Image (cartoon, rainbow, N blue to C red; front, top):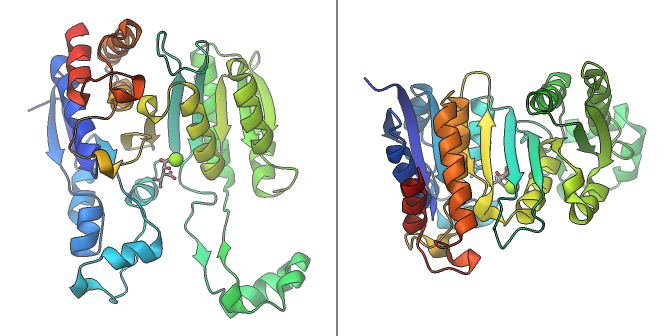
Length: 372
Ligand code: IPM
Ligand code: MG
């Protein structure tokens, strides 16, 4: 019996390339696990009308956590076009498997560290050390959407909100509605985790990024809960910023910020911005954490044009493995891995194309393994 069972989901595009890199590091660390491969991705959408087959959900339920490569997501019409001919017109609707997994497994917290490692030529500055906590299952990505707007929804909204009057002469066919749903519990949870992290790692501020001056009820709820929670943490300041201004300040003074907390969509946006400050998506790791399960994925996409070429930077994936080891309580391995990654970046001898190098994905992983 191995100590851990890990669901192994390479997914699409370069997913497999970076998962192989992950395996090289895990083996070097003598990580004691059984890896259970699961089907997920575009191929299964095309063949089965479901990019996340039930059999894969089952594997996740039987494992300690999941390591995930990358996924291709396309808008509705394009997805429909690529479906196998016999499945077309049968009512299959594409929805992002990763968003579904986050919701089905209640992975309420997305943790996205963005740290500038010394010697990375792509760093915007060398003193950036940000950690984004993104609410991961609700908000504008709740998936509660309508088009056309059902008549009952229109009349109910009109009865309950004066501002709906403006839309009363628009035909239902011409209105799309996506709901931004926040629960108090999820707001409290994401803010609390930001503060707990700040406390544990001696950081002196938590910035809550919303837009309560306009989105009064949802963003408002998040900020109001944050103010209450902040009172329990003396010595850690709560900073409140609006998402638009925050994007500007992150470009201006990223070194002034530390722990960032936001809702699903703003967290999605701001985490890409933070990633670019520390070298781009090639360095951006992420954890999706719930009460009973967790899934780890690099933030980058599937980059189909590079699939199978072992060209892309595996650092995001290797840093993601570090997050997985942290989650499992394998602190020493996590630290050794991070130190090795940092050394390889600083030496700058083995680099993928994004850093101006010619090394392959696996060359970089092997170099990190050598340092381990
Ligand atoms: C991310 C990605 C996903 C998201 C997409 C692929 C659905 O952008 O993990 O940040 O929006 O959450
Ligand atoms: Mg994103």
